[in-house]
Picture (spheres, rainbow, N blue to C red):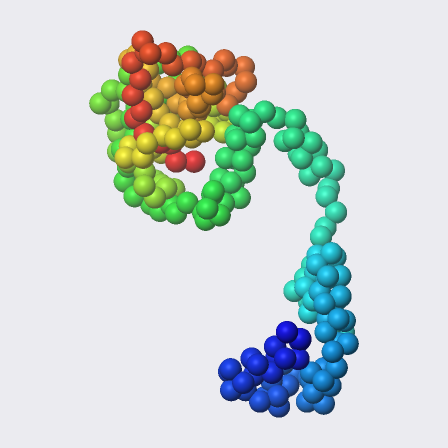
Length: 238
């Protein structure tokens, strides 16, 4: 079916006249009428569409007198941006995951491109820390209640972190917020009790095995074996 036939059929279907269409799209009636009468314009339109696609622009931008003011020319990468890209490409999957977590947190984007909602409220913070380094004794019932302006939605409690194994994602001495009702998935950070000791680590499954992994490469991954007693306390909300 030709271009003009398609347009005419659509006009009949929608009960719109050519004059109404011309006024709506902002072109003279005579120009529209000429387009619908000349089949050669169809080929030109198809060619313009292919050119626009190849150049990565809309056909409207290509055929309009001026480029759309809403389209911005891409900025050249700075030297620091080039360096960051090079370092990111050189990282393994664990390193890339850590960088993405930090970048999403700092920029306000999550995996769903929405910032985690945070608000002020009273929260329980456990004093016995979870280890980000050497294993520590099991989480106790010792805690204090504090008001925080930056509690993420879904947080059940806070817990102090001791050690640098989760840096730079989680700093030594910081408080992380934990959702006890959310299971920790592959690649996510959580609080775990392993053989009676508390750990803050990233959970990873690889080669049919389970590992608790540190962000700091100075620490070796901890392989969880069948003889180990492991319990997930909750997911850390980053």
